[in-house]
Image (cartoon, rainbow, N blue to C red):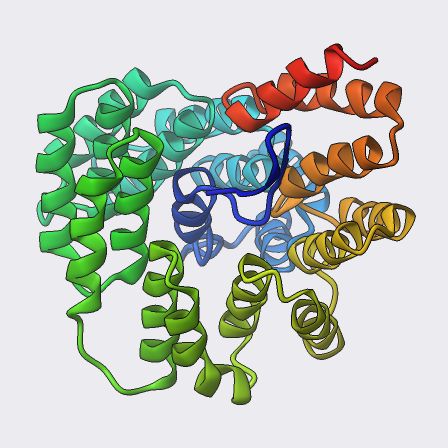
Length: 362
């Protein structure tokens, strides 16, 4: 979902769930695996936990050279490559990890297959995702909601709507209290121009009960996805007052959607003060600067965000860098940036449109 500033200029402030949210949820918390004893493997896992992906890559490569627990070392290497956005290398590493498993490692095999499918999804190799998830599910005794979702999303991208619906429903049956799952299914349908179908999953999520901070935050997420920004803001007031970090990020997006740049700027500055730097915060600050016509300040925020480790939130920064240069009427630089962008993110229609527009100006 993008926020349109004019017909030829689209500012990004939220990546699609299939490209980000679900995949990050799968990635998060997956660094640790029991049984790691090799010196380099243990150090590599610690580096992953800290988000030091380049360091982790080097440590896992050393672990592999030393013959340390190859399943864990290749798995860790794959995770490091995922963090670096190098999905082809991640796919290769996870494939090697699988090759070193045996029948005594069913849980490890399932775990690695899920990461492999995630890397394949990022590479848009949807048939491979379907094959990998099918193998995972055939061997899984209890089923796997993430695998059903990934396979369903791949089916939907391939135009197999009945198969997608069956997998999405199977995922919900296994994990009916997971807000991320409902949101991810909705965005899968949204990206397939079938948002009316996806809305039914958001409505199901709205029916979930609760009364704690996370509940109000999640309900705010549902309203945000539905475009009901006033209701989202009301749901988020309590969690934001409690300095609940996810809610603070979300209300920043709400303010941006409402074109309330004063409050958006304040909340992103508060997040940086309380929780430290992040690409998403710098992107929010850059958007506020763009709307105020301060394009050089926007570019300085974008530069700071791009200098951070990891790939999280970088796509939006790269896109808005193009926007800032276009606003400055520096079409040559904007076009050069757009050309690189469409090479790195070929499936982004907004990027393709921006590139096509800039070719007429440069």
